[in-house]
Image (cartoon, rainbow, N blue to C red; front, side, top):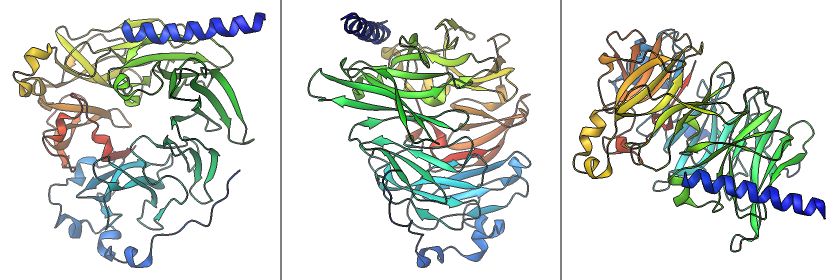
Length: 459
């Protein structure tokens, strides 16, 4: 009886947290099918072997010299997938048919996974893998053919993908072996690799979604043993779990709680970000945030950089903050008064934060002149504690999503339909390329747009 009441009390606490935050081997498949010989032959020898001059005859606004010794950049252009080699400046075309999107490098840079789009409206399709030379491309067999941007993730330690998504179950996909189904479910699932690549966190919905007698269970899957262990049971609460990230030491997890199970409308307006130490049953409330994993990153000391604030619009109530994942304590930076701040990126040495600042506006003001808000988006850099903010004036305005080079000397960012690279000391920026984004697409979802849907930088 005591255990029964303890469980009821735990469920009540968790549901209350979510509510307050919102308000305030086994299946074996047939052999993998390689890309048909006829399709592989459609890429000319010149374009696949890295004949930069031949490729630039068709895509003249690509500047590979800007990336010299700064890593390799995969990008999508007119539906095709290309790679710029940072060391040599060579450009290779990896695909020739279909529409490639969402390129993602493997941990060692030997492979690229991407989605070949078949549903142009939903931006979903089949999962493909190709090596960096453009050889051996194949469609992953058995998994869903309606996958999107965040439905597949590379292991941080080996050339293996975890595949989830909406109604596709969960799969482990080694590059050189058969895919393995580890979970069969029709419910939406989110997955995240542990830092050592030995475990996988995921959610599964249990019960009838048409009733309140349902909800998600958080599991940890051990890759070596093939066994899953439940960590948190919300199956009787009506609450959903969206797995976000592991703690850097692998001892805990971050997830978003959706107390209306997997309500898309509620998700769009922000969810409660929660931190859970493995082995404990009571998660810590962090803050209400938008459910964008690219807005979560860790400082070297293990503290978490977030964008705090509910509401789907970026022009109101968004501020960069630093959270202690163990205690739940949050420190607001508020380093550019009168502005919202978002798109944070931590420098490789952990001493600087690059971010975007834009004028804070009420909806009534924004909708009178939307262009004025987008033109107020500027690139800034501050110290890791939020002090000494300075604007990179030469980056201009209408800036999106900064990303540091590996050595911390340069910042890649999007502006006016192009990708640019600027020295972190604010010298004159260089234009790198134009991806397949129109001006209209840059408005994104209430101001949020990821150019990394078309780019992947191996640094």
